[in-house]
Amino acid sequence: MRTLALIAAALALGPVGCGDAGSSTPDGGDGASPVDAALDAAPPMWPFALPAGFPVPRVPPDQTLTPALAELGRYLFFDVRLSGNGTQACGSCHLQARAFSDGKVTASGSTGDPLRRNSMTLTNVAYNPSYTWASPVTRTLEAQAPIPLYGKHPVELGVVGHELEILARLAADADYPARFGAAFPGEAEPISWPNVIRALAGFQRRLISGDAPVDRFRRGQGDALSASAQRGQALFFSEVLECHHCHGGFNFTIAVDHAAVPVQESHFFNTGLYAAYPVTDQGLWEFTFLDEDRGRFRPPSLRNVALTAPYMHDGSVATLEEVVAIYERGGRLVTAGPDAGDGRTNPNKSPLVNGFTLTVDERADLLAFLRALTDDTFLTDPSLGDPFAPAGAQELP
Image (cartoon, rainbow, N blue to C red; front, side, top):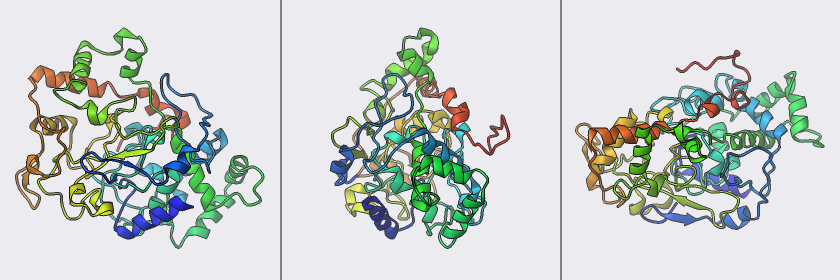
């Protein structure tokens, strides 16, 4: 598979993690992918209900999505037996109650390796034009999955060296043979790594969030948004704050893709988080080696953003209030340590991050709007939850 070859090249560039990865054109760059032509041929097959107004996500033409496939993927996503040492699952770093993020600055892999970047939310991940924080080449969920499964620098799930052992665990389970058989009818040996990856991708494509108060307000429920949140919404979409230029649209990010988009584009921005980004994490530059791409990362969806702290690619911003303060300032001031400096001076900073002034009340309104992007239905839907968890368990670490 071409995408697997691409991700192998990405792995060779250096340590990447489940929450890693970037486009190649300067300044918020829109980069059409060489794989666009193949992906554009995908038929809009989608077996699940979508929120009103949401487009049909793109499914790669060589993949399928069925309820049986997605359900198998749900079991695999939350099953620690999928890691080499049987201690960690995909769901260990992507908790439903946290909108499939983990609340940590950065996570650790199954063998204790620290990961470089913050675990991204998987909210509406089916609409991503690219995956991880700064990769322009990881274009499908099937291409992303090998990173946490097989990555060695750092180790995440640590599958390498345990491939046959893990498949044997699945084959010996009371339920998995039937689930694989239902998901891959007609295959003589459906329990295989390619099918594990297809199932994981299938489940993640089901993680659609579109029932937040903001959505209900837009559907005509006038009392879904408080007056404060409505004022915050007006600020968010104003040309003074300019938030919507990077976080607009139905998914609250400009980095979005779906079946009706003619060209799959990625977007990456430098937000002035550092005056000079740490040499250990240069974002999109790690793929393009263009100086103007230093510090550029993909803008994530803001859906459920109140639950995905800490923020930014390195988890270095603890609260939503701090995030707003950084954008008010037009870049972060780091006052001490090896990364000390004024992010406003970063030469690659997006011109959209110019700073603005808010009153105390306006700041509260903006935060109220951001918190109104929380979709409680998505966070508690049992069909998206951990099938191995005790009934009702939604403990946050």
